Length: 117
Image (cartoon, rainbow, N blue to C red; front, side, top):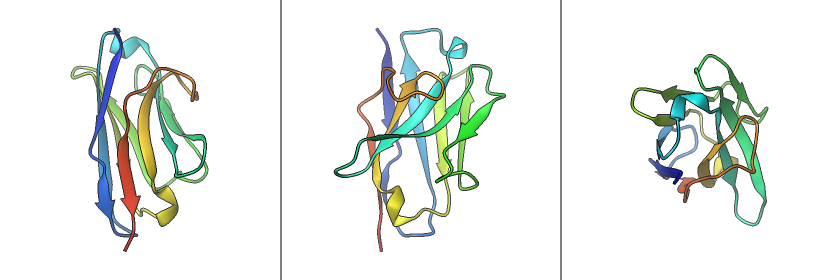
């Protein structure tokens, strides 16, 4: 059974940083591209970033490029998202999801990020 468990969310001031983690189990982790997606209050799912199985290919939405960094540790089966220069519009529930450049894959329960002063 695929399990994805996100952690690391919280309240941060504009301009601050936060790091998210996603612990994965139940599948061959290094064989799969993974993504971070988010859902802001009252809005639909938005794709944020993806990384391929080997970790050598990363892509980002225009809204986060240059501020967010996706990475993975295939030895520990963990996906990461480092978020810097956070803006109020980054406020959302963040999910890790299976698939590359996808919002439809299996995902975890999410972790809340609130950017507010």
